[in-house]
Length: 203
Image (tube, rainbow, N blue to C red; front, side, top):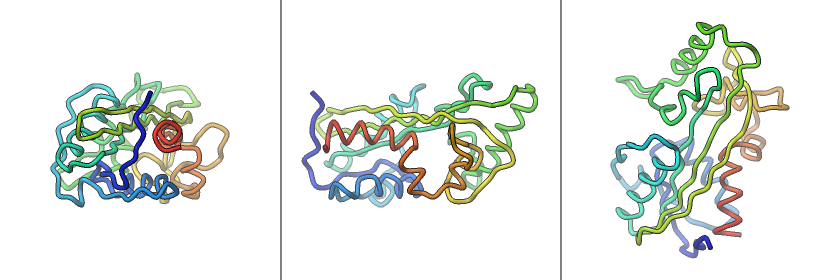
């Protein structure tokens, strides 16, 4: 049986402001007070695993041990079918520059690769999210969510973050970058994983 979260405060193991805002919104109804690894001044541990679950565990256990509080991490990314699942666990790395992360550049790279391959339409893919809730004693619980969609060009919208402006979920006419944040939160890969976490640990 999955361990219940009974502590009133947890650490979100991220330095990503957009991701932190989404997670805070999802946890707010449950009265859980959150802080972040960034706010606590923690370093970002090296993500050395080749899976979302492996990297999520690294981040959550690092923050839990450093803070003495339960810690929740999110490892997520875009998997493009015609690119054999890339960028996948390296989604953020594709945006790295000496000046910081540049996601418009990363989106142009994805689309250029699809064009080079003459990938047929629809250019399908999915956002995947793995959550790991870890406790300072070393126990954890892992939850995996996903949302299917297609890649579109040109980029559309400025309401999301990351690769949202080029991802259009199945059955929708807007990209995540155009969509009202509340609507996105209701259907996203993160919402899918959170529904599982809430049922197991908070519900």
